[in-house]
Length: 352
Image (cartoon, rainbow, N blue to C red; front, side, top):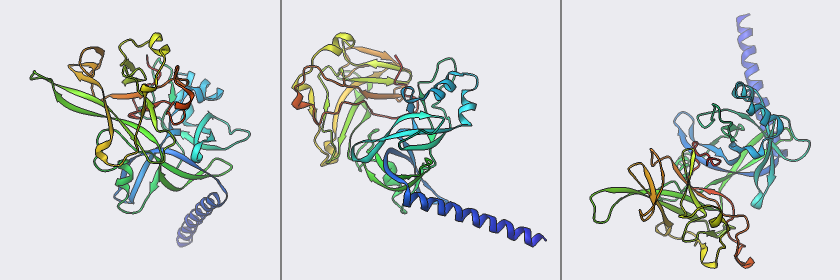
């Protein structure tokens, strides 16, 4: 009798594996294929071989994309974490250039039409509780976060940048997935994204004529050869840049505000980024310096704000959707969406 039970358990496990394999193959054959943008982190599992743990752009959804049911659940301060953890989230997707899909809505019921992916909320330290209502859903998981690759290539993908580049600059990965009609996803392959991206680098600099040192924050800009966008809007006053420092935003422009926002741009404010040929040619622009708990302008002449830590920082590129004063012929190729130099969990883009 005992042998029969053991055999039955073994057969049940084999049957389960077969069902899973058949289900995966069905999704691969018949699922809708799309690319998802991601940045890879945390390579190599010594027990399972090389793999990359993926963090997708759709793993973090701002409040503007929440459906009514999600928004209502988040408003319930006492029960939101428990309630959402028990629910399946359905994230509607929209195809963009090069078939890269972006999220357009997240809800607790599947949409009536269109492509969607099914996920779950697994809150980590990026989920802000307390009296403040969260401004984004962080740590969404879709069952496609582990990507196994050829032995020895995991570190290269995790590094996300060519040898010789320091700082936070990462070239994102695009992951092709097949998605079933029920929203289940399976990873197919990867490619390096053709993109214009930014990062930042902190370096220690000695003050001229002084014995003291400070930390210089520089913007890094990288463009791959086939990127659609080729230029950034970077006027001398850097009014398209700001610092995300913990839960506060710090302006870099000396007269930031309505007047700066309405000041017209000129052709000289458009900076064309050459495609990377040699790593030493990465574009670097000094943005700010940190010393004794203060953020100052790059030349040290103005105090921008205060912070306990210089490491908890990101540069935000946030240009206007319609740059005033620029001729129409300069708009093609100009990157006109928000960019972050670091996608760390603590960045609050809705902070004041």
